[in-house]
Structures are given as structure tokens and as C-alpha cells.
Length: 155
Length: 155
Image (tube, rainbow over all chains, first blue to last red; front, side):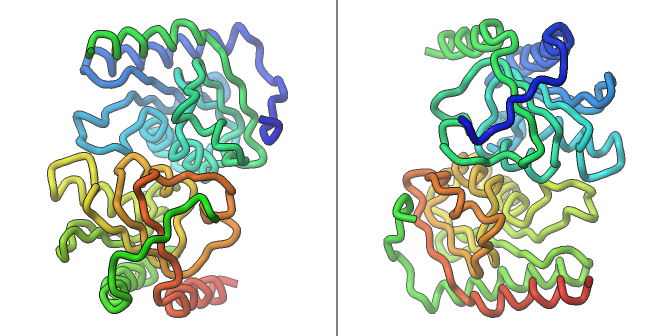
């Protein structure tokens, strides 16, 4: 975990504010009977991208919340890079989404709950862009609980 | 590199045949002034997905050849998984595309030329699905040359 840059740049209050909005996206996934993960992309206090997991509806395993938030953010700003942006995502991103974030050169990733098994962090190497700051654990309980209740309902 | 399963299942001749078709896709990218990488997905000797790099046209850093080939393959078969399929891609996939292949549970990935800097292999951990067999170096010279000529032209 020492690969990543954990430098603090934002207030916890601000991060909680935006994570609540990412949680709103996750709840849209839940309402659509999808794995409840949500994401938003913020640039200078403006939400420029949103997304929630739609792998079932699109029948596409790549339709993760983060991928859609990245695509919608780049469409909003009309550029390929997200250099002054923060991704807020309710669950630690997977390898694919971490790899996508590399290409966007996003400044910051803030996630809610850890995903020990399929999250990128435990893959043991630096998959993020060197300029990307990583922060975890913002509203982790709420973010994780949404996942837990979804999978319990499915049993 | 010992993380990956390099078990041989196909004939070199067959792999060359399909890599030539992936190269045709790469040439479409080149003609569109995009980084020339192409991919196809093959299931039981049938091409079920194609893609070429379109990051510039879509203004989207996630529009890699492999991502589009995966999405088009799952649309063709109407299922989310590519369990009996092979991805042929002219250049070693990046972390994002390796991560996407994990979710598809694809049986096999065959790439042409290595991509030392941004390819997934040098990231040092097992980013592929444990069931995915990896093969590299099929028509590596042709695949690499296409990239080289593209970047030389741009200087």
C-alpha cells in the first residue's frame, strides 16, 4: 500500500458531502437490482460525471459505476483527461477501473468501503497514475452496508 | 510472469490466422489517425467481436480495442461471459483491459507485441482471471511495426 500517494488535499466534510451523492448513485443501482455501487466525478466543486453499476441491464461486465462516471465526465468537459478532478466511488475500484483511472490521469480517488477480494489495492503493484492521490474509508460503513444487504437479499 | 497460465491449446497457424484479422482492425485505427491497436474475439472458430482503438474519435480514454471487442462479443452472444472465447489483440493489453478480461472470464488471450511500459504483465501481479491462458508474440514484428510507424509519423 506504500505505492500510493495518500496526501490530504480536501476536508473530510467535503468528502463526506460528495460521498453521499455517490451513495445516491449506488441506491439507483440497488433499485435496478444491480450490485449497488455508485460514483461521481467532481471538478472544482461541480459534479461533471455520474454513474452506477449497470452490468446486468447492459449485459456488459465493463459497465461499472466508475467507467460510466469517467465517460460522462469527459463528455461534460469535452476533453479526455480528468487532471483536476476527484472520483468518489462507494466501493474500492477493481483493476479495470483503476486501470481506466490511470488513462484519465485523475487527480484524486476517494472510495468508501474496501473490497479486499476484487479491489485493485491488494493486487500489490501501483496500478494508478503516479499523480493520483488515493483516499479510502469515507462513509465506509454506509457504503459497505448497501452491498451487504444486497447480497444477503439474494441468498 | 509465473503468475500466468501459458498452456498451449491452439495451433500457431490458427493463431496467426486470427492475429492477421486483429491486424486488419489495427489498420482501421491507423486510417482513422488513432493509435493502431486492433482486437477480435473468437469463439469456436467464429468471430463474435471486433474493435479498434478509438480514444480520439470518442474523446474517451477507455475506448480501447479490447474493450470494444469485449462489448461487441457479449452483445453477439447475449451473455456477459466469454468463457469459451479467445481475445486476439495486436499489442499486450493495458491494466484496464486486463481487468476487463477478468470480469469476462475469457478462456484465452493472445497478443502480438509486448508493451513494456503500459502493458499489464510488468505490473507484477496476477491481474487476469485464474482460468485465462495467456500467449504472446504472435506476429509480434508486424504488430509492433504498425505502432512504431504511427509514432514516428507523429514526431
